[in-house]
Amino acid sequence: MTTHYVQCELSRHRLVQVTWLPERFARAGDYVKLKEEGGWQDGWRVAATYPGVRLSHEVLMERSQDYKRTRAASDI
Image (tube, rainbow, N blue to C red):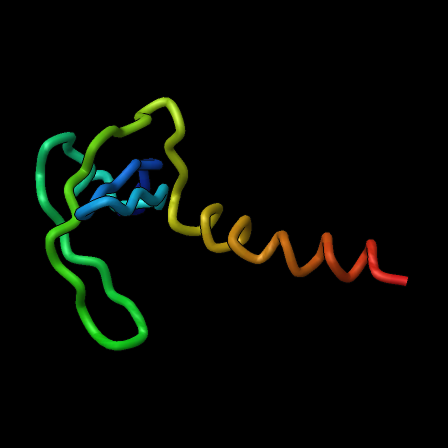
């Protein structure tokens, strides 16, 4: 079974960020924890979800590295 991810807008205090969450956690109004370098950071509220933007885990991992290929192709 493939996990699908949904693009979401998260907010915490005055911070806002857009990220990809597994579909089961992508519910507007819910709170989630995000894994960061220093550990887990809780208190992020899912402000909005964009279910029309849904990707499988495999495709999302491929796309997450696109910036490296673009940068390599554009640097002289």
